[in-house]
Image (cartoon, rainbow, N blue to C red):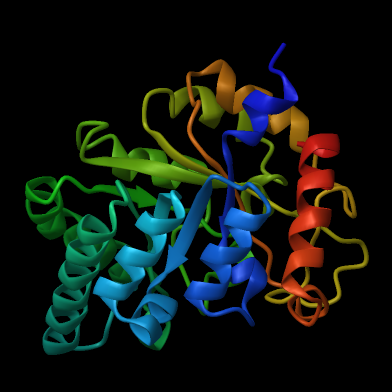
Length: 274
C-alpha cells in the first residue's frame, strides 16, 4: 500500500485551482505547502514572462507536471487552422523551455455545427504537430472532455476517442490525460483505462457536485461530490501510471478563498479521498 508520503510526492497544484494567484504566487504557495509539482497555464506564464516563469519554478525546486493548453484545432478556414497550429508550436516551445514533458491538448469545438469535420481537423492537427513536439522532447496529451463541452471546448468527449487517436502514434509521442471530472460517468471507463496502459500522460482530480452549480465553474473539492476518486486512481495505477496527480478545480467560491487555505484543504482532501 502506498504511504501518505509517497502520495504527497506525486501531488501537483494545477494553478487554475488558485486562479487569483499569479504564477509567482502559485509557485511560492506550493513551496510553502510542500507540494512538489505544479501544472502551469499558458496565460499565467504569459503574464509573468517565459524566462521569469522558468526561473521561479526552478528556484522554488518545483517540477512542472504539464503545460495547459494546446489544441483548439478546428476552425472554419484553412488560414485560421494554420494559425492555430502555429500557436500550438509556440506552446510546445514553451513547454520545453519550462521543463514540462507534456502539453495538454483541449482539442476544440466544431465551427458552424460541422462536428465530423472538426474531429478530422483535430486528427490532422495532431499529425502535423507530432514531429515538432518530438523534436522538442514534448509528448502530446489528448484530454477528452465531458460531452457537455462538445459545443464549446472539445469534440473529443470519451476516453475511447482519445485512445483511438493516440494509438496512431508511439506512447512517447501521443498519450491521454485522464481527468476524473470529464470521464467518471463513462460506463466504458475502466476498460478504456486498461486500453490506455503505457500512454497515460496525466491524471487530474476534483469532484462532481450534486446538484451541479455550474457546468464550467462547478467543480468541487475532492470529497464534496460523487466521483469514485480512489477507485479511478487505483485503476490508473494498476496499468502503470505513477506520475504526478494534478488537482484542477474551476470553482469561483474556491478561487475567492485565500490561496494558502485552499492548499491546506486540498492536501487534507487529497490524502483522505484520492
